[in-house]
Length: 95
Image 1: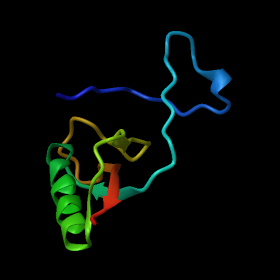
Image 2 (image 1 turned 90 degrees about the vertical axis):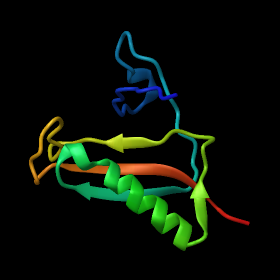
Image 3 (image 1 turned 60 degrees about the horizontal axis):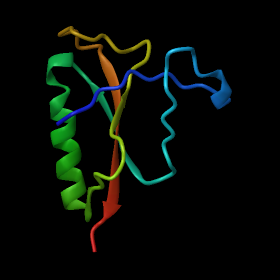
């Protein structure tokens, strides 16, 4: 099951636009993956991240939100090689 939220960063919280809700991300450890390539292959960035976590003693911490950050370099629904997305996944050190 997946929920998708389209988010916009605001500061202060009082500036949340009408009709939108506030989601507060608590401080925690995230992996950061910078993906560059066709939008249709973004899943390869998650595969890379999964491998890196495994090799370095981390695992996903599914207690919090995963998020992808799109900006002016993001070209959604395109096979353009210039497309860029930053992917943040909550992680924890394996015991």
